[in-house]
Image 1 (cartoon, rainbow, N blue to C red):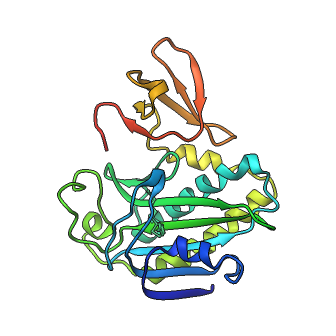
Image 2: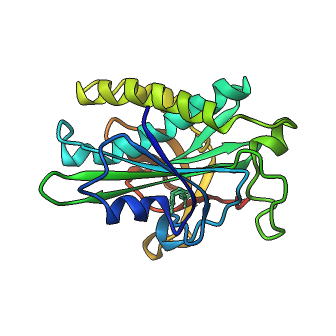
Length: 243
Ligand code: BTN
């Protein structure tokens, strides 16, 4: 496993984007601190030195563009399995598309960005709340860390090593068109049978029950009139309990 470590960077994902031709695939860029961490949907990602922040790029040549969303989902499952292994706790779940949840709180965020150039690349950035003890008041009821949940410190290198091992395995299977990992995603689907709302205008004021994640990686929902339909990557949140 190859890694490049920095004391501080604006963002590990941005670093890869700016050095896209010189950074090799699957090399981990790690920063102890990010001064301009990026989250999904234009949010920023504020973290602390006790946590793990890293990015790497992959070349998705063997994967159809339509299946790119599966790469993000697969990454979420790999993080979930890694954290379950390292903490010896099964109750680590995936909130579709790729937040990792434990005790109803987010402990990891994942962002995947496609860079279209001569050879397409996908930059995957992962922030795991590992040994953080202070969570700001604003996030206290939404976010936590492994340290706060399991009351002990975790080895960040061991987390990355396990992630690397598992990612390579599952990604190779996806390259071979094996999508069986989706069954595992459904097993650990945090939203399963929960009532959710979708945070965009089209679906405002409606509520849905989440059924499952299908082979395309879409979330299958049932509306109030019992119609089934699927969505691909909107922000979803729980109806009665916004987390
Ligand atoms: C989310 O919004 O949940 C995704 C957060 C992703 C944060 C990680 S930290 C390492 C990498 N570098 C970034 O700037 N963002 C990702």
